[in-house]
Length: 253
Image 1 (cartoon, rainbow, N blue to C red):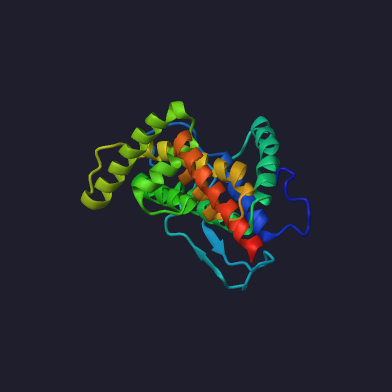
Image 2: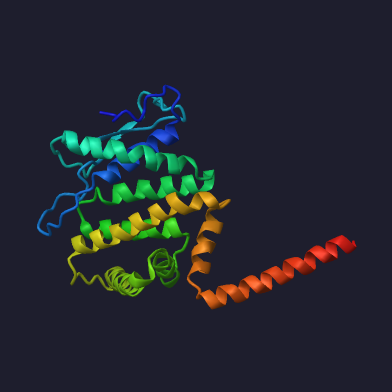
């Protein structure tokens, strides 16, 4: 069921791909079950993969392969009410996505591809590590402290302290697992905690990034927004003065 979102025959394959990604994200499993060895995703890739060209057609009749990690499972069937809920939300999300510049759309597509495949993993430790990479892609940084600050900037003042503390805990868990192999925290719980922040950053890009020319401007806004009001006013006064003087110099020339 395509939910009525792909009715145009000239629908670009990139837009179709992102539609599918958002659909997949929309039906993530939202419950905790630490003893469940199955992937977190309810909707996930099948056993056979193929290569396609820009028009969505098979690149070659023999270009297909199978996944070694595929786990046979029943097809996920959504209830009519769930379908209606998703159908109602996706057009608005996709409209926002279409309003973004090409660079931000590309980053979102890349991040969402990693996002959904991460939660296809049965190994929850690997799932968590891939999910952390998603944040790095979305926020254009592999520096953990900078990454955390950018996520914190998205949240309301009353939530910033908790968000920072939670992300610091997730950072420590990631570092200790990567460098020492420590597994003292249930990785499934960390996956859901990290998923919450990924969604927040995706929503930030969908709501705000259309107002900027490129991803760097959108990220620079987060770096600037973290500053206190008095500091921002001082910076604004200096910038206004610089612009005023530069305009006068141009007129003299």
